[in-house]
Length: 82
Image 1: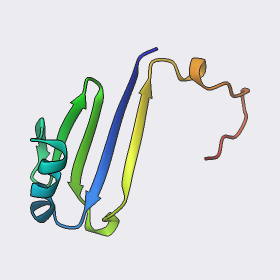
Image 2 (image 1 turned 180 degrees about the vertical axis):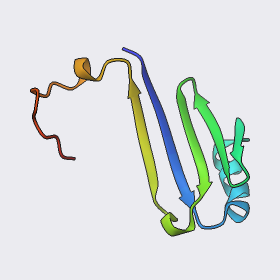
Image 3 (image 1 turned 90 degrees about the vertical axis):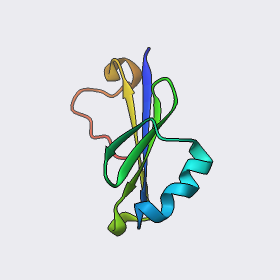
């Protein structure tokens, strides 16, 4: 089963935070836009630092799988709450 992970860290001020995250994660792999850069930590494992002042200190994690039904056994019509 293929698995990919994309995480995002939200910061108040991208330019102020950038140097610290470069020390932690290394140079970015690519620039998504002026206030977001992405570091590929390993194949299919990336983390982005993005300026979102309203969500500073929060983050998001997205996990990608080839076949979700094969990974999660949920009866049809069941409500899944996290």
